Image: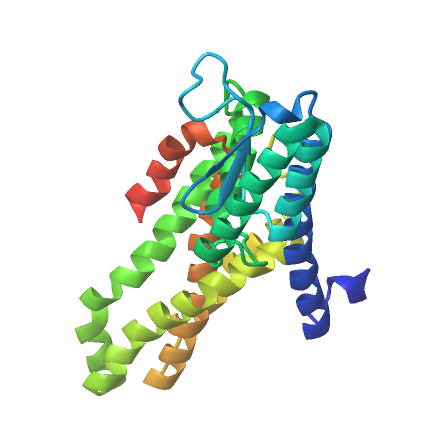
Length: 222
Length: 70
């Protein structure tokens, strides 16, 4: 357990790789589940967005507008798109099938020529992921009632944020006296203010990545 | 997560002590750098914690307080 929790670079790299892979596989899986286990796959509407291709239920109340009821905004790879078209063709009859097939093939080639950058493999855009998670979040917690422990912890977070922010800015007031007492030069005085901001900026993404590695699933406050 | 918050606060405290008892500017810059590690962690983890624990509809209101003091 200790070895797993350690910061060996191989472990770190493997976890990052596994995390990305899970994200990609989950996106494809979601599209396949939505298409294969839908009661009426023909009613799924596929339309293009700025970040990729959006597959969603057909909205009967607003037939002309985009469907909004169960939206899976995703950027599927071309193989997934091919399986979707095959599935739709299997569900369709006779000459309509060939028509849909040719139309979809044209659409696929159009996608291939236009949207190659959007359908790359590591398409883990944070906005997309949030739009996937958004309906479940709002459905799960309709009303947010912060408990007393949450408010206390939130106040302490505010206080240490105040301390860190004050520390970054309030040095310049005391800097002439400090420089005089420590007999420093102007460049040293300048660097004492800059080193804080520099290390702060360097370590902010590092610590955000570490919080991914160590996991945020512990029930800290609830 | 809680270990990271505590580690950031510990870095901040150690850096503050080092910068406070410094006798020359080298020690002071070293202390300020250690303080910067903790400060960056505190600023980032505060936002990550709020983002994790608060639903999306009230997130803006809960973000306003740390942004107000910072």
